[in-house]
Image (cartoon, rainbow over all chains, first blue to last red; front, side, top):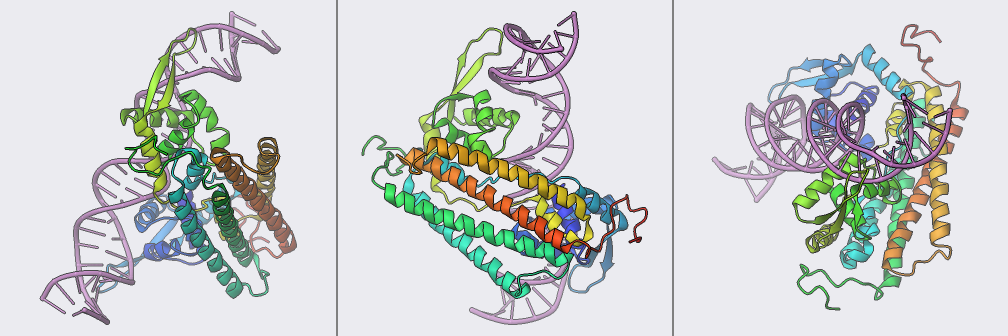
Length: 196
Length: 196
DNA sequence: ACCCCATATGCACATTGACGCATATGCGTC
DNA sequence: GACGCATATGCGTCAATGTGCATATGGGGT
């Protein structure tokens, strides 16, 4: 139950509604962990059932009533116990890598455009991280333990994006250098397979 | 269906049984994409039902009969079509990052040991990548398109592991520098919470 | 003799995740 | 006035993934 723990972790900062959590998972921690609002609401129900969070209803007019969730002491303890367990190193699971693994059996052109798109994507994200870092940590140092965690988080994100962006660039260069030596004819629904 | 495509990608190299694929997914492509044998057998059934692969039974004595799977032309075409679609940038989804996000609400000591374990883990993997790279690509260059894909793959893996290892080291240093400024008392089932 | 390991396949169940759809309303815009 | 958008919650379904268990047997260690 990692998403649940991610939600508990978010609620240590301040009480939030499901809607706010969904927005949080669209930025900040969401840079690392994606989840849409349905998933979050479902997880919130589970956490509430387990007594880890408490919902306080705030009546609104015009909009559905809010449910502001607060961590209970049990929730805090659960989070601390979870955090005390060793983490599991994740695998990369990027389907671009599968394409690279089968590079000689697929078409190069789509891969090139894909790599260019990905290069732009990762550069954008890198810039975004750097911008937040410069804004939140202009000195490059953290003042407390809370800040330290977020500083480290942002640094990791920035470096990761930079590394992947560099990789895309190099892959594009290597493909250019290799062009013409390919073994696969352009994709045309396999109707004129052995042509080139 | 990314695991299915990963299997198709593996079968472009040579026909394999589910068992061999499971081993492949325990090394090589498995560095990036984890899957146990049950998952692979299940996916193989699906791919066979769709006509993307063909199983040839090899009778054995003492062991269950082998099913050697070969890519069909339809499977090849499916893989090429899949590979021609843009890839989806994955998120990092490392639960160590959730722990860092809630660093001020959890216990530091377990995080330190976790970081040390992770440091060792990622260093090991980095060395492994470097070893394979030196063995398969002593010149640091690829001879063909197939080799190029695998060279790039290994390079990305190596860099990724190095980056994460460096990150763990820095995080440990930062935690040491920060020690004593913490706000959380040691975890003891929350029975003497506000003590320190 | 007993147990674990490697070989080789597979089912069943639970969790997680992705995606569409539903409800309810005020506010801006075309 | 119709339409989309932001707010705010939630159901239902299906695909993907994770975990445990089952079957069958030859070979090596204790």
